[in-house]
Every structure is written in structure tokens, then in C-alpha cells.
Amino acid sequence: MTVPQRQPVSLAEAAGAELDALLADADRALAAGYPGERPSRQPVHTVYVPADTYQPGLPARWGSQALDALAQWAPEPADFAVAMGLSPGLATEVLPRVLAKLAAEPVEDLRLDFEDGYGDRGDEAEDADAASAAAALAAAAAAGSAPPFTGLRCKSMEPGTRRRAIRTLDIFLAGLRGGLSHGGAVHGGLSHGEAMRGGAVQGRQLPPGFAVTLPKVTSAAQVSAMARLCDRLEEAHGLAPGQLLFEIQVETPQVILGADGTAVIARCVHAAGGRLIGLHYGTYDYSAALGIAAAYQSMEHPVADYARAVMQVAVAGTGVRLSDGSTNVLPGGGRDEAVAAWRLHSRLVRRSLERGFYQGWDLHPGHLASRYAATYGFFREGLPLACARLGGYIGRTAGGLLEEPATARALAGYLARGLDCGAVSAAEVAALAGLDRAGLDALRGAGLAGAGLAGAGPAASGCAGPAASGGARRDDHD
View 1 (cartoon, rainbow, N blue to C red):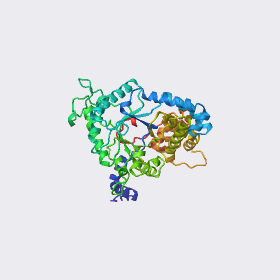
View 2 (cartoon, helix red, strand yellow):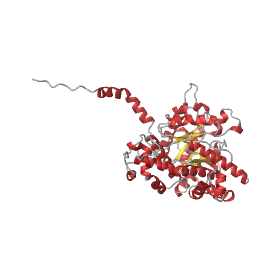
View 3 (cartoon, one colour):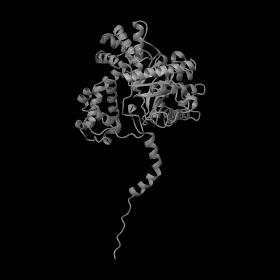
View 4 (cartoon, helix red, strand yellow):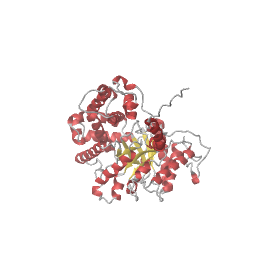
């Protein structure tokens, strides 16, 4: 009787199984810690205002003031070109779009500030302001007049302000969710340090795009503590688990480089249990902490470039987004002062955009004009070439550039950002690149092969969406 001979196991099968076992933990950690870019909208700026000054009509007032300034100092494309540092042709394209943006959606992201912009006014005053600011934001959200992204900045997790930060967040969320007591004053769900359990209606939602900003972070432990506080606040106020998201400000040297020589900010990114959505660079606190003289504190200083480079590497592939800081030069006074401030701000915004920081802070209504001028100029100037490169990649047409899949993802992300902020239109992208928004998101989220578009022409642009990026993420920040 002939015994069948066993087929030899190939090296690929044998070694592959062995390596799968060896690398299983590393594979899981990579997938969990680096789920990829979020393909949804990121605001181009965050506007900070002292919390006690906020009223539902504030964004519209800021837009109106910005429009008035343009009407006074840069009413025509030629004036606008000089004021914003744009070429005459580009200014002609950008000006009407900026005017329309300032009229329709002047503020994309609004942060009600209880930290440096507010100060220490005592518990009674801050309690009252937290309650009234929350009520005002709730009214705006209910009326549909709130910006698409909103939130508050609390005080830091340092010992001297920690309990005040918790108290403000507690009172604010109670007011935002309608937690009024019998006497009409807003009381927090964590009164006397004890979370309410079982009394609140579970699963209620926050306003779309809501986030908390945690300032002056010095350690990954503070980020973990903030994530734990979010757990407690959700329990106290009947929010669905994972609804409360936050961003941290990078404004201390300790969070960039630790005593052990490591990049602490990288550990911070992975210490929030999926709640961290952004890193915001703090221009002036960080520069001052390094001893930079006040006259030289700037987003262009080498210390700022170093910190942002570390931030950028730390968040790459994680889905955590970046925001640059602010300028304290305000467009006030006469024409010469306004134009000088606009040109400076426009140049700084453009510099940030070129370095991959697609968001920044604005502190004055006049900054809105230069923010949108620089942003719209950036996306409109690059629109024809980006569309040609992406269209050529999809169609596999011969050209002067050999594009990589990673570059195709970057090109799709660039165009999607331009669409999100209103700098370019869907019709322009469709005409120039042969792609609709679904096609851009597919390329941006998964790459060409992963999205099922390899070898496809423009007709395939509406097919599969981005691949799942892993982890639970709230829809309005995705």
C-alpha cells in the first residue's frame, strides 16, 4: 500500500505564522494607536472670547465688524490684495468669497474662555458666569445660530486651579443640559464631589462639535486625569459614554521634552482613552516659559517651530488634529495700522498652512478677514495643480510627476479642506479632478487601493467611502 507523501510546508506559511504570533501585540497596538486621519471637517480657526462676554449673537457681530473693517480699509480687490498680501488676480477671486463667508458663517469654532482670557474672579463670580454662558450657548444651539464647533476652556489641572476647573465644567455642563434647580440657579451634578448616579436621563447628546480645552498641560498623567474626569462628568450629567471630548494646549516646555529626554506630548496623545481630538500650540505662554523676550515672542520664532514639529510627529497617524496659536497684533487704529496687522496675520496663517497646521486661534473680529483671506488664497492658488495631479493619478495618465498613494491621500485631503471652509466649490473640483466629495473622502481615508478605486477613472468617484479607522469617535468630530 502506497502512503501519500505530505506536501512540504512553504517557508512563507511556516515563517509567516511564526511572525504573526511574534508581532500580534505590536500589530494590535499600531492599529489601536494609529487609526489614521479623521476625514471629517476641521475648523480653520478657534475664536476665543471671555466666557462672561458671550451672547448668542456674538459670531454675527464679529462678522459684521470684520465686514465693516474691509469696507473701510480694503473695499476693492486692489486694496484687498495689498492688505492681505495676495496677487491682484487671486484677490479678485478671494474677496467675494471672504465677504460671503463673513456674512454667512464668520466663526467656525468658538471657545468660551474661563482661563487666561477670563482670570481669577472668585468662585461666586465664576459659578454665575459658567451658568449664564452655558445657558446662552444652549439657547444659540437650540436656535441654530451657534457656530458648527463650540466649547469652553477651563482652568488647568495644576493643584491651584484643579478644583476650580472641575467645578466650572460641572456647572457649565449642567446648564448646557438644562440642569436648573428649583431656585433657577444652575447647580453641578458633582456637588460635594459626588457624581449623580441613576437620576439623570442617560444617553443625552452634547451640541454638535462641542469640546473642552485643557490648558497648560505638563504631563501625560494630567491627560489621563482629564479623561477620567470626563467619565465622571458623563455619569453625572446623563451623557452617553465617550461623548465628552477634549483638546489640550501645548504651552509648557515640560510637555515637549521631559526630564528623561522623551517627548512627553507623544505619551499625552495616547493617554486620553480616545477622547483627545486636538493639540493647540500656545504661542505666548510657551515662548515666555523659554525666556524669549516679549518683543520676539511669535509664531515664527525658532522655539515655536521646534515645538510644533514635535507636536506634528506625535499626532501623525493618530487622528488627533493640530492647531497653531495666535498673534496679539490687532488690526485697529487707522488704515496703516489695520493693513499692517492684516498683512502680518495673513502671512502667519499662510505659513502655518504650508507647514500642515490647518487651524489657528483668532482673538479679534478683524482677524477673521485676514484668516479667511489667507486660507482661501492658499486653497484657491493650489486648486488647479492639485486637481490635475489627483485626476492624473486616478486615470494613470502620463505626466511629469510620479505620484505615490500617500501623496494622493494628501491631495484629496487638501481639496476636502478647501471644500469644508468654502474656499472652493464641489463643482470646481468635479470639473477639474473628476471627483465628488465621496471620492475625495475615499481617497483621503483609505488610499486608492483600500478604497477600491485602483485603476478607476473619474466615474468611480462616488464609490466606497473611507475605511473604518478604528475606535469610537463622535460623529460631529469625525
